[in-house]
Image (cartoon, rainbow, N blue to C red; front, side, top):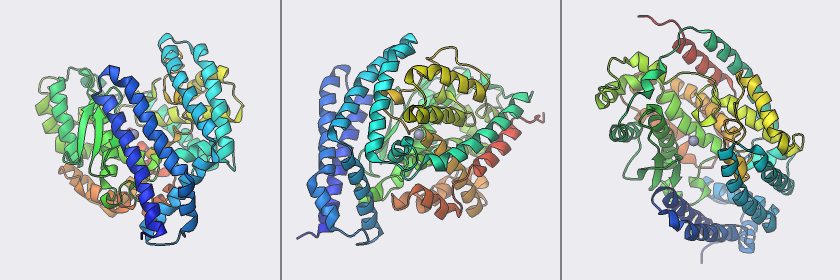
Amino acid sequence: MPTTLEELVERVKDIGRLRSIGQLLEWDQDTYMPPRGVTARAQQAALIAGLAHEKLTAAETGALLGAVDVNEGDPVRQTIVRETRRSFERASRVPNELVKSIAEASAVAKDAWVRARKEDDFAAFAPHLATLVALKRRLADHVGFQGEPYDALLDEFEPGATVAGLAPLFAELERHTRELLRRIAASPHKPDVGILTRHFPRTQQEKLCRSMAEALGFDFSSGRADVTVHPFCTTIGGSGDVRITTRYHEDFLPAALFGTMHETGHALYELGLPFEHMFTPAAEAVSLGIHESQSRMWENFVGRSRAFWVAHFKELTALFPESLEGVTLEDFYRAINVVRPSFIRVEADELTYNLHIILRMDLERRLLRGDLKPADVPGAWNGRFSQLFGIVPPSDREGCLQDIHWSLGIFGYFPTYTLGNLYAAQFFEQVQRDLPDLPDTLAAGQTRPLLDWLREKIHRHGQRYRAAELIERVTGEPLSVQPFVRYATRKFSEVYAPQAS
Ligand code: ZN
């Protein structure tokens, strides 16, 4: 006879297995499925998602959770029980009818958004946004919150995070970022970014991306890399099957190169989760913010560092001998670290990116509180944008209609991107203390010491620690914007300083 705890763990694994089947269906849809497969795939995906949800919220799950002690067993079992109870309780508080209404409303809203964006017609999207905001507000009321409704939504992506905790950090980050941006804008020493928009043949880029993914530690015996319109990373079979995707632009090298490094960062986290506990919270990421800290660390702190390119610049120029003729390592390093205010979030540089997030979080909070009418979003967006960036989007397509998130009913997700940057900076300061020769190691082409450190400190624990607890355990301090501010000030002051010739 299995014990109650064993029975619960087996049930949790079944839920995880169902979800991973859903991931596989989605991966296939985005990569290789023929277009006419979409009708069947929507039905298959809905069935699998429904089964997983039913199994999680079933009375049997509640009974098993009620019968086990959260302090029973080793830390792994305790993590599984604690986190399953959390998802069970959250899911049980929301009526099925509301979950269905949100799914239906977002299916319609997504279509409306695609058209509205194409035609630059926010008014056509506004009623759908109003419906989704009202539904998500109801959801927040069911889930419950202590501060403001936004907390309940934030908690879905970053468990434990609240507006009260984040708002002061983001305000401080905004202040420092705008100050640094003023100095960068005043500098006459701009990098030559033209070298990145020359012709970079796709076949050569494919070789480069595969090689860079391997250089960071991606293991192709436990993963794949394919091509999609929007790059992502997905886990199909625990740390034994992790897949990334990228896109290629022959006239813009950074898209595929840094997109690949970013997704590789996500993949390295998934590949470092304990294989023996797959399909349970003991082998799942802590939060989206912590996940993003891993992608940003490899993409920006490593991939956009001089040290990394000391090791790999020769290989790069050998792949593109004509396009990069006469380009020095220093030219390249400065070009990939250009800072320029721009309208589109996904194209933003490392520094201005956070301002795009601060803007979105402000608006989302006001929408959820009812202080901002959905119809007034364009004016609010452009006003805040101009304050943050000193420029105004020429159209809503390049403004409040650019992201897909709201059309899917996703609110409270954006802050996890900036949290990722902040966590990454704080982890990176710590790893440099723990491994003082890290720059030399990276310059010698060795990324393994950094990866081993991340595995030891972060990956192997799965969801054992909450994000706030993890950052304090690893770095000895609660989350702060200072490490990011120090890193950005040092790096960009140097990139924009007069260059010795
Ligand atoms: Zn990411």
